[in-house]
Length: 279
Image (cartoon, rainbow, N blue to C red; front, side, top):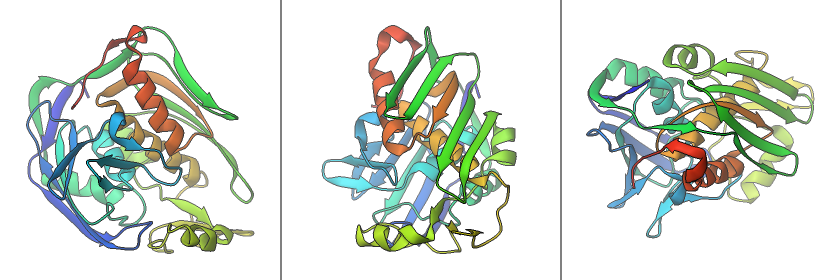
């Protein structure tokens, strides 16, 4: 994970967006060294860094010059998890297609396309001291380390309850333990979300839905929920514009807090010995 890399060829996904239900398309294309991740929509280039994040609880949304791209977290997580440092994501529609609600299909397509090393060091965020932010009973803290490790505490109403996962992140562990974990929700929340214009593309084909008795379809792991939270977190950490070398502890955190964390850490130069990314 210390060397930059991109895809050997483009991959394309089409399908519904999780929240809008609209037909969407994304082409994930190779990009030169030091590009980072850049979304292109309506002729506008939107770097995937925290300064372009629009605060949202239910998805990570990027915007620039009146153009927005929603639900970017799963594809960004796949790129991070697979070790891709540079990619251009050409989007048609308001969102990234939800596919099956995880990062599995993105990772498999990247593997089929091939990964090309770019013979240049990958930008990294290396902490000189612990850094964290909190919002009520939610928090995310990063401590200096030489590799990325995530310890996540998820806490939801029954039947999910409290789940904990501790994992070192590299392409092998991500592919094996995280990539296939699907997005999730509660049956009783669906109508309320749809009234807010959200979850209109959600279904049992692209999300794990819980009723009072448990999931309406089998789980891949008993703790699939917290694994998906780690998947989301890694996608949101892409907004640092660099690979984070830290021991990260996240407690009940979500997209809004993750974006604030990335933005604050990019601004906190005294606590960071190296940080760079697209601008």
